Amino acid sequence: MRKVFGIGETIFDIIFDQNNTPQSGKPGGSVFNALISLGRSGVNCSFISEVGNDRLGKLIREFLTANNVDNSSLCSFDNGKTPLALAFLDNNSNAQYDFYKDYPAQRLQFAMPKINADDIILIGSYFALNPVLRKQVKEFLDYSRKANALIYYDVNFRSTHTHEADTLMPTIKENFQYADIVKGSDEDFYNMFGTDDWRSAYHLHIKPYCPIFICTQGAKGATLLIEDNEYHIDGKNITPISTVGAGDSFNAGTIYGIIQNEISRSTLSSDAHTLIKALQHGIEFSAEVCQSYDNYIKR
Image (cartoon, rainbow, N blue to C red; front, side, top):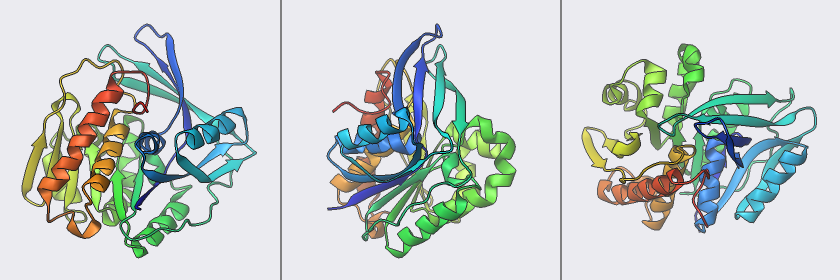
């Protein structure tokens, strides 16, 4: 059975509505959210991350187990606290974030798990770029590549890091080189490259390293680019309550579809129509999450 390994940040999300009233408190983090949806869908998955040795850390560890996600590679640290994120929703149900973090100097010490060919690796967000963690993340990606795993990279580049885009660009492009699939939103590419033209960004910055690219476009759906071929999948007509976790759930649904349709690393580029079927699951997962204050699909 194929397994999904995610490596990323663990954080506790508190979501505030348009009246600045707290509505939900949930464990989160972009890769974390995707793995919870996958665990709830019956996919065999494991999470590599870190939490504080505190009450929130214990809650998160138990939450992973309750949702069928292996937490044996979840590190605990004493000199710091599990981070918090406050998500404030605007009138379009999109979130602006304030983060509260207290990490120790020594971070992310874990043993490499057993990875088989065509297992799926999910990486993304600033965690995949952070200079403090780059050595560990790069070692994991090298190990995964040697195992012939399929690597899915969600850039998820927030506006809070726009001022660092030039400095981080070599690491971003190194991640493109590792990836078999690169996924990002039109907003991500504006934050990284300062342009709304994500097609040009693909041809200039991604295609030389990774030919398979997925661009999510909110309510408009998603577009798959493979070399010079383009395929669009419409979004669902819904009224969103919260978009927190929408992109993460898209990743979960797409990965679920890749497994369900038995798409291997070697067949990714040669069977676009089957890959489109996988993306349809991504659209469905994302639409479900947007209709609640949860970061993941229901059981």
